[in-house]
Length: 138
Image 1 (cartoon, rainbow, N blue to C red):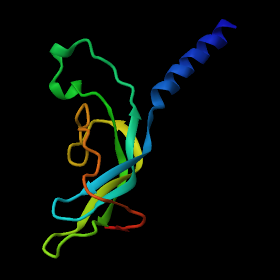
Image 2: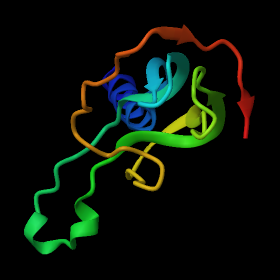
Image 3: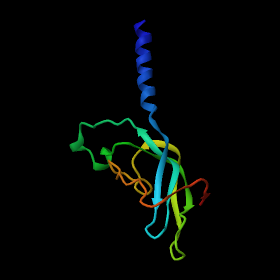
Image 4: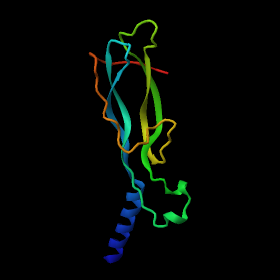
């Protein structure tokens, strides 16, 4: 009986390390340009969730790159482009944003991710809103 219990515990720990809660999550963002008359409300998906990390005891003896902790980040993504309504002719009305297709736990890549600890709380509109329904991919 104890051998079965011990094997169950080991299997649970191994599977628990492989499974994370890092998944594409629905997100609403607000996009506006100073020169344009409207703000767009866009529903998209971002990567969000929990990744298992460990604090390494030998920090003084390891190179800095080895101390990076995993974050929930994009595995696969596509870009969508929308047109912000009410822009004058001299202003480019297009805005592109990533849409998470799948996510992974890994090092944060600053080429396409915001790797800050706490996001800036400015996700609101200061102009009249227009919900965005359909767009085109680039």
